[in-house]
Length: 170
Image (cartoon, rainbow, N blue to C red; front, side, top):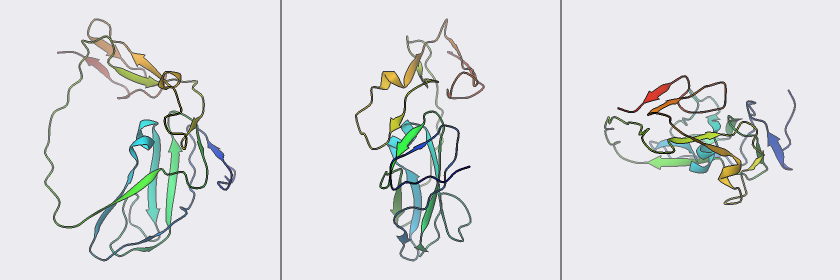
């Protein structure tokens, strides 16, 4: 365990968790529905993040009318990442009114093509989260190629999705 100084750039190692306080806090209006969500770029590089507030009941949730600091658990899963003060990993969604009812839909996987998906390279370089459009995806991702309509994903080989699964085309 060691302290990470985000006033300079810092490397957050894959598989390790860091919990800094955020630079800005929140002052929410009463009766507002809210939900801290990751930026899409955070999800694409597989950085788990979980915001929390003082006296909060759960990660990823902030009470109505909350006025105070926000903390963030950051845990890179696939790649080690470079961050610094001001690196943006999260955003806040505020909503008013009644939420839409969610639909349930089936999702399938097509294993008939040459490439079925991508898996993070096990020994990839460092991802600078503030360097937009500055990384070649081929340096970080390798294609998953089905054979005879099947794809075996080994959870020990990298961070492929879904873990411990064997998919077959139907």
